[in-house]
View (tube, rainbow, N blue to C red):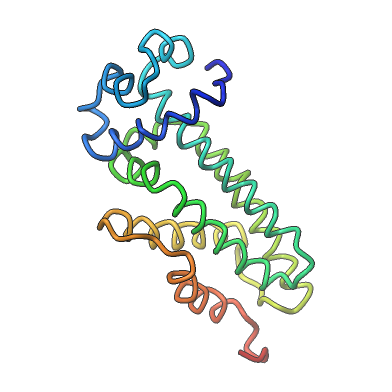
Length: 197
């Protein structure tokens, strides 16, 4: 896939709306061209087909998440506080990209066949969260888990599925409203038993 210019990338969320509303199979590149205002020939210049358009949208959202998570991870707080910031960052990105998230829900089968997504999620989320879990054990703000890599996956899944359930139901996603419930479960489950609440 060629590098997509910013002015074209800015129009592509309209494609996510189509994938979410009509389904991937029922959306043609002609439909994407009409919805985005990007000529079909231009779309084919940058993308081999609609599969690459979906992959691009998901990759862009994951890059936004990676950027937000990196900011949260680098804060000077305890690992537990930074982990809470990571959860809020993930929810913010998902709230900012509801169409892409809804397209993911509607097209999980296609998204699952995009090999770059697994490595992008690992780089954007699993690796920094696993490092935070290790740091939390060292600074005493989190208790040790048997497998930090699995814990990072569980956290990503819990936050993702919580957010997607709101979006799938057509409810607005409020990071401020949803994060306390998630953080209560996550941090109370990870905080050392002798730590104050």
